[in-house]
Length: 515
Image (cartoon, rainbow, N blue to C red; front, side, top):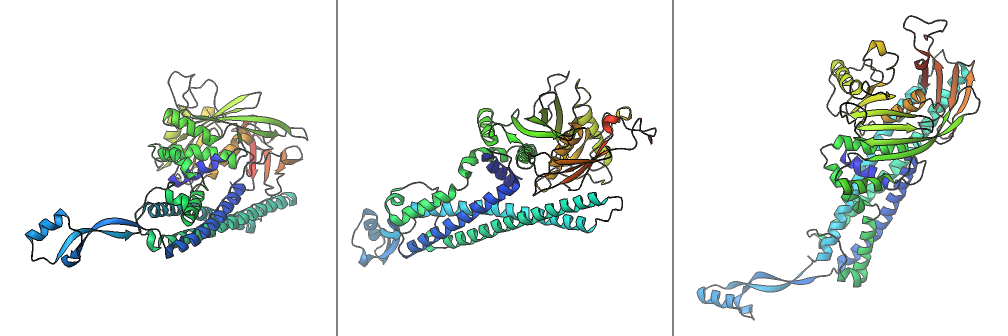
């Protein structure tokens, strides 16, 4: 989780244009890894040249020397010789050549830091490869199980095409990540080789410009390569920000905040109005923590109604961390508040982080009632469209549908998909994107937006008899396919039953791609 904080801050530092995608990030990572390896090869060559004749300095150290070879007498020797006339050897200070100079210690320090950085990038690549392998396995399984007799030929075609596109994306991502992994592996091997050079068997000292690094041609080259490599990724600049965040007692909440911001930008297609990293850095310097910070994003969204053409709207999203309520008798402070504005209305949703395990359904429903319902839903004059919990562990009882908790049967229709929870941790970040998808499609009615790739283009739509709408993402690399329909058991419908849904909650969405 601490590694993830550094990785996400590094990505957010460059989040200035959009829409951004994970694929663009990994292409950038591969280029950075390739460049780093090329620079390390050049540095290795220069360090090998220095191996033949490294710079040395004379140092004074005490050695045992036969009295017959001592040519300069000091007071200590004269006294020792008078007291111990029978001794043949005496400890006296002599000048010796030593490779333990500040520049060698600085070179070692730089190489050790480069290994630390490369190790983190290598772990990141391997974790991503593991996730992609799982994703590919589930997609291949889904392709082999397309035998639903209730699907018409058009639906079958679009579903298979959507899954194949996703599989192609996963394979391309896997190739990029594997290339990055290869480069960083070779980088670490080469750096280890440099550290094994005899004149670098010294302690460490932080790198800085010195007289030798300035005027010696070879040492000047070494310094330049090291300095360039250490600044290839802005880790020095980031350290003042990520170190206090990593030490925060609210580590899970901090990770959730950064991960939410990262997913909104790199997966959901939202564009920040200010650079998020700069906001975090300045807020941290001013306040000493991130409580109360907020971020603003924009993106186009689309709604298909009875019209053939989509209605385009510019949606503004504000994300607040630990923002207190101002319109309740008690002071409540949900971890994350989401406010959506489209020029006509403003809607709010809440997420609250709970890092402790949820052992069973009873405990889960109790927390949903006490937190999501009684704190962040019931007391508010204007109800939120969703009040959910996020937690790092799955609910042990897999039979519980955590996306639709019912607290009050008299309000069953009102609360539909408004209360619940989902798992959220570094190895499973897609649940948040799934939640955003629910908010935009189901609650806000922007059914023409693709949250699978975050494209700013409207989805292509066609309908079947007016009661079923088909959507296909217009991004050729994605082409996600989803269907909007209505439940047969709704009020005033021909087949309505006693527990029929209200028209406002009878909408159904079905997706071919899992998030």
